[in-house]
Length: 170
Image (cartoon, rainbow, N blue to C red; front, side):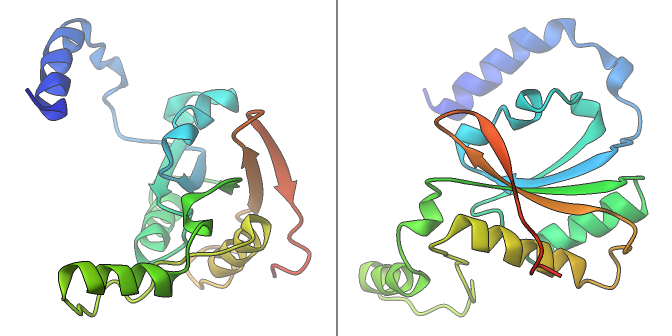
């Protein structure tokens, strides 16, 4: 049996008492962009926010790319989100290698030279990466200037968030 099969069996059991009262249209108050790292799975609960208030956007490395910008535009312009929080974290896997190293490894292992992805968005400094992601959001013309965009660094050893100064992020 696979992990997917196990998940489907669990879903069949756990959904028996499903409360459909939360199935209305989404109305988040805040968008949180964070890493797909499993250590951040409980980040919404660690901030004491109700799940319904959060539009959670996750990808490897907390990258503001075409897809996350698309999600932020929909969230702020169509769903009513009023704030954006970018949460990077210490010990991120994307800080352990360079994009060039990964590309060389993949080409060596597969013998293929595809054109996508154009970048793996690796980084060495999570605070600087957070500032860069803030700049990407702030510079997009479809993200309203009145929507606050703040960045944070999550410490997976303590569960604490520390705000990353964005003085030079504008």
